Image (cartoon, rainbow, N blue to C red; front, top):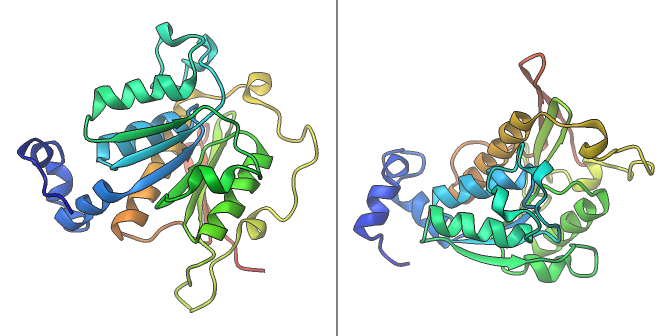
Length: 249
């Protein structure tokens, strides 16, 4: 493990004084490779927070390009990025924010055929996609690779986040739930309309994306209790959080 430079010590000072993270946790962040599926509404706060936190490498996966309608919530992109690949725009953002973070960009659509290759070597993966087939594919790849998956979703004024880690045990010694325990079946075609059709409040993506980044930091550093076997939901209009538990079937 490489020592922190004086600039890194100053940059991460607020983490280093946290007993739950400290030098060992910050070093774990520096050594981590986080694969982020999606550089959009959820991916934007995830990428920003993890880059700021000092994750050593971010592997970004998104086949889409920036459009002006994205900018209401996808704040890592700029007006001048209109039409540019999102992974390229996101890379520029990370480079400007923290030069200590390496970025590997894949401007491709993740599917069952390439998911394993795209997340190979990752410490964990974060799913901020808006496509259920991609969600199931990355979950299967993470389970095969024996790495945790942080998953989140937003809809209008609501959102949810959970951690899938079937290779781990819960406090009672039972295997943690799988993706299929949270989503036993794919939703019917058209059941999950795109945000272009129904809208989404920009701050909701920030709330859920930031929670997803927090779960990733906890998993990497060992701080706290991850959302394994639990779904944390957020009602933006009611300003309420609630929790649902689920178990291995």
